[in-house]
Image (cartoon, rainbow over all chains, first blue to last red; front, side, top):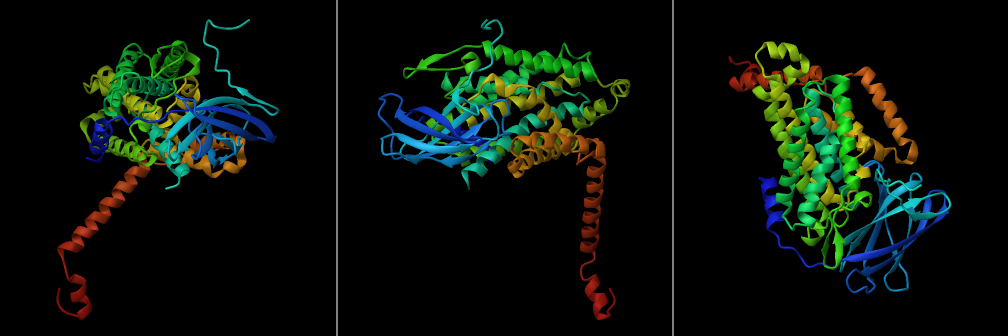
Length: 135
Length: 320
């Protein structure tokens, strides 16, 4: 009964016009497996900076679903509008899906794929699809 | 409830579906390394349904389960003649084929000026149903566990039904089952279809929980884990794989201080457990003992209930 009620709830509820967020994330190594990240949040339609939000940053390893979830940390807002800062502690180097959880006036989630190495952080390079190898 | 705890519990709930899916095949005596393939099909199908076609979550989950169940039936028929290691390799090959197909799969639609949909190796982002419909993390957790409870109820009924007995009989001795007049092939395809549907429901929930999926998520790692859950937790009851998920994710969370070495420790523990208890913690013998113990308790309660005041009469020295 509970299941039916929950499913009915999800099915009947009307879509709510939400503000969608976009984010730019730049991280740099602070100490071993710790990274300082600067996150710039903006409205995806108007590109206006999104400030005054509660931003929680966490990360998952796409190759190990549910196995290496990083405990979420709250980001602090900088003086620049829409700019937030957080330090995340990872468990190993490699590709991580960094999850930005927005709450407050805007509720949204933005996922960024980044490759964390010991000396730098860059865009994650997804596995090469067959027939698309670069030589 | 803490957001982190909700996240961990949601992960446990969603992964339980794929664990139950592998468990169902284990009951029929087949080891599948490919249930992550059906999990992937369910995730993509349900994600496409809500994000691109604007379907409700209910319809999307049903669609995801139907597509993955259908795919499982299609795989089940040609792999019927395979057993043991050959079946395991065939399922693994299928799952890898699915993963590679999703690496090539591109189907994007512009919604509000933004391209949304599966984009090959870049994955499928913006499965934003829960945000667009204001469903918070706790409500989604309730949905996951409500569905899991419903599936567990079906499993409990299945294990007490003729169908459950047939599945176990096939798992114990296929030839003997055939000699008893059971159409083994038909039942094995049925089990494969149900297992595929279960994995598909899990995949649909996973896609909406994380809002993002990509082919790498559905690699062999997930397949091995989903199989290991049944083997760790036990094959005596459907609670076994759930116990396995709880041990795995709970253990991983509790030994967080060991960081990247956790998987090595987990692997060692699994190996040790399989030597000590080859059919898992809740194996058939333990489940039978628990059942007998419970039956004795019920019998004792019933007997003492039939003679109310017996003890009082004895204490006061009167006749019973």
